[in-house]
Image (cartoon, rainbow, N blue to C red; front, side):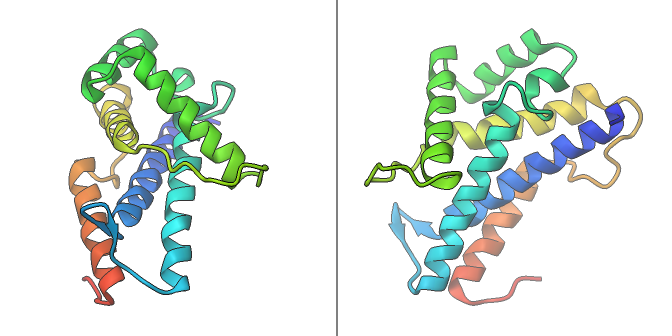
Length: 174
């Protein structure tokens, strides 16, 4: 795979992860679920699951093709910036990876014997993916690799959040 294709695929993963995170979060107000019915319960759960799967491709699988450490040219600089952007320590980030991988491995990829599902905390997820995406566009673009990509991932995320809220309310968004 060419570097251009790899970078574009990683950017797509970032967008997919954040879109699914936004759609998941759109289903809640003040920590309370604002939807009913099995269709929306299933859809909301699926948004979380896909978000976790995509995030793990980017940050949780050191052997994966799309793992940040295999993509960026300056891994030390990237990681230092990531921790700063997310306002976390290296230990906090490692805990996030463990939490996301546990959820993925125990409840998404398999259904292990645990009876209580622990939904991962998602604040670091949002910050890390946003940072990675912005970093790709600012530091890894070697020749207009992202002409059709959202220029500001925060604007894209906000648009997805709004669309998700409208979906839970049964409205259409243009």
